[in-house]
Structure formats: C-alpha cells, structure tokens
Length: 233
Ligand code: MN
Image (cartoon, rainbow, N blue to C red; front, side, top):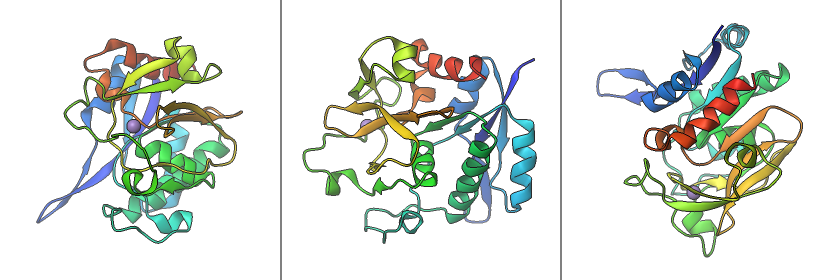
C-alpha cells in the first residue's frame, strides 16, 4: 500500500480568477519516492482539515509567500510584501493538528518557517537587512543545481540521509529562522550562520530551507530526503 502524502498548495491570482497551484516538482518528488500525493487546498472550514488528516500518512508543507509577521508578533518590514493570510491561518492550524496526531511533517522553505512559527519561534523578515555579513540566499538560476554550501550536524536527519557534513544546496529565500520554536533543533546551517534545516527533538518533524524537490530533478541524491520521509512512515 502506497503511503498517502498531503501536499499543501497556494493561490495564484489572475485578473478574473484565483487558481490553486502546486509546483509540480513536489508532486514528482513524492511520486518518484514511492508516495501517493494528495493536494490539500486552502480550506476555509477547519473541520475539513481533520478529514484530510484522517486520510494522509505524512504531510509535505511546500514553499511560497512570506508569513504575516503579525503571526510572530512583529510589524512588517517593507521587504515583507507577499502575504496570503488565508494560507497562513490554514497551514498553522494544519501543522498544529498534524503534530497533535503525530503525523510526520516534511517542511520545505516556507514550510520550515510555518512550522517554526507554529511552535512559537520567529523569523528574520529579510536576511540582507537584518543579518550582517550574510551571503547570498536567492538565486533562481541555480535552483536545479545548487548555490551555497550547508554544514550538516552529525546528529541530524540530513546526516543520516547524506552521510556527510557538507552539502551544496539551492537557495530561494530572503527570510530565515531567528529564534527556534519549542521542541526543535538545528540540523544544518550555511557558512554565514543562517539556519538551513531544523527537526523535531522528539517529534517526526523534518524541515529544510532549501528546495530538495527542485534539486531532485537533476541530482538523484536529493530524492533521498523524500524517500527517507516516506519510508519512515
Ligand atoms: Mn540559503
């Protein structure tokens, strides 16, 4: 029996309509890793979240827009512009309920940030403005090949998967974890000290700030993050 993997989605706004969208690389990564992807819409009725959670074995929180800073107690900096409050509220509830049920979560990019905020942590709203000496963290051109190295902690899920302490990853984020949420630990950082992966201390939570679903298109080894997640369900 294939494991059913919930994959979160986002809105795409057009002049005359609002569509639901998932980058297909997430779907491909879940499928190629042996899972069965189920796209989770941005639900209005919170009871419907429970029905989705009844269905799925694991949850992939995908990337996307910035989280509303008010949700971690801050006013927005002018660099924080792309916001979708409906998605923020729904995903925070989804994460809270998934953790309650002990459903494993793989958070990618924004997904990592949502989990951190859901567990009481906060974010740098803009790395270039707030972190002195930080190197580049946004390169669309290298999304399939990699942009900066990360240092992987020995006692982490990433070390278990890659069995090495240095890894070249892509980077498409201007925000990052500032203070860690409850029950989380750092799994990897970039050389400038930005947190690039976190995981649950005693809960099945695995998060990366980079995009393994994109890297997996060109570099098979990154599919192992999805295989690790799905095989351990
Ligand atoms: Mn980065």
